[in-house]
Image (cartoon, rainbow, N blue to C red; front, side, top):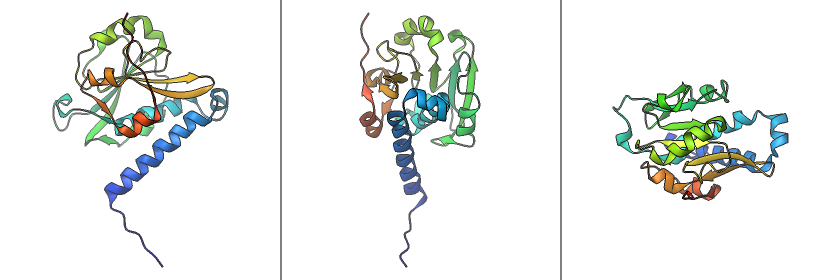
Length: 194
């Protein structure tokens, strides 16, 4: 009988690889209307939002202390319901506990690591995207042209499929870097000057 021994760190990396592959297959293989019937669209997006924490590199200086939480902020109504909270419960990003916050307007934005912007805030946030100066701020949305307007990550429906768009330049402006694995899975978009 053969026995294999894998250390915990290696198992965690393998699990992450498998999980992103499963999520990506879900995005690519399930038509949007079928996804609504079998899954809640925002449960899938919540899973992908959580996995961004494993495939994006944040600078150490974006945390006030070693005990500071890793903050995911949702602007406006929470489209994820309890899905995102359940996914991040007891999880950590580089030993920082994950905390979910919700704000009603962009002026309430405080120190955060991921900001999810729903389409209802497009007119308010799009002009501000180029002016966000916080180091370590990853902006994510799910409306067309978000990355072209200066957002970093877009989880959108295109031709009845869920797709991922990344704007590495926008991420770099906030001292963030995407893993090569994530870059291989996404459609890369650059900010369009207006």
